[in-house]
Length: 315
Image (tube, rainbow, N blue to C red):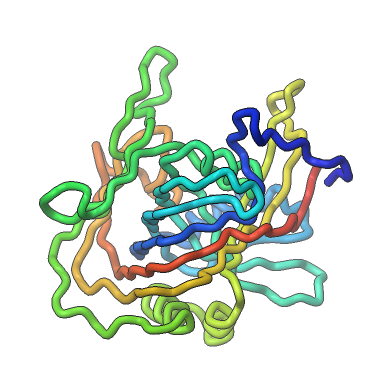
């Protein structure tokens, strides 16, 4: 951390805006898949825990992962009031337990996204610069974009093999396919508390009652990310590195409920995105790996990406 003021680039083609960020008219879908707890722990030990420096440590909570798709009518910065843009994002999430060895504070539930994709550049750059989200550009398709079976697509640049002589290409990295339509849906959620309770009980069925209570009543969902900048002089070093908390608050709730149809996830096999190995701890199937969805839900409303805080800073 430095006491030097940030030099804003507003009016000069800025692509990184000031937080908080407000997202209005959003609708999101979440799909739960089985995962391997040891594989998730290995992923956290590779991409997150080394920056903790013994101050904080993250442990895999449950053998599961979640895929989210988000469609936003309007997104903007609260401070840099340039205007607004529509946007879409999709991500893969895992729940973790945050420990602080020697601290009086107890363990808490957090969410970490090792894969996240977005379809507009300002959102990508701001997410990376401010909170450290590992966002990359993608084309994200939702049901209703085209006639036929409802499907969710994430299309981005992939490298099927690591070979300097082979060109990368844009392809569907993963998609969620509805294999059996919803029967009569259950009663919808009516409040934000019911959203938290429904998600925790039906999609995070293994959490303890204490963690369920915390998820239901805390003002924002705690998300953590690794934020870092590579040194220009030594590419093996980071000139800045931090674990950052990036809380997200659902400010206005307008609808939600469980998805009772049947879905599956298809993940394209490629060297650049080792999703199957990262989540399941095994090699992917040839061409693509198909995984069953254990459950799903949808939520609509407005939310805010709050300022957050630096948990650990290494410079």
